[in-house]
Image (cartoon, rainbow, N blue to C red; front, side, top):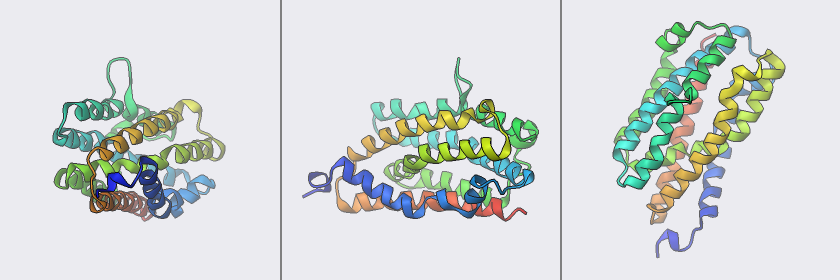
Length: 229
């Protein structure tokens, strides 16, 4: 009997959420300090500049996954992720919206886009994620994206904290409002894609391991940012 005979979509999502509750970076000390208003201006700039490196590599990661997906329908779904970040006609895209946040915290765009402020540990963690998506089975790469299940709640908390404690305006925080909806849609797409492919308990367990790996990447990124000062 295969796992799809006994495990529902809701049960699979519950298992993923259980992993995220334990391993996601929502309770990382750096995030807690951010949400409580305890970051200095320079620490906030460090985070914005370093997180941009992660954001900028996501279209690269998604292009790799896109090239490995086995069906036209899967590729037609996945390509939207690249357009969402890089933008398209009539849509500035997530990267431009992140640069608006950089403007708001008084970073120079060329400094952010060049990666001049990116800590080695951040670069190592993000590059490891891109590498993971290029060498592991495509199902693992798709599963790793399921950290997005926890994004909507985190985006709400973060946007509220940046407004209350750091005086940022809604215009500079548009990325977070946008990404909340994007993450909900894309996590749904990823789960639907995986449940068509994962047949055994072992394959489901491997998908959960990929989620844990992605959580490690996100926590390592914050560790590196926290160590800058």
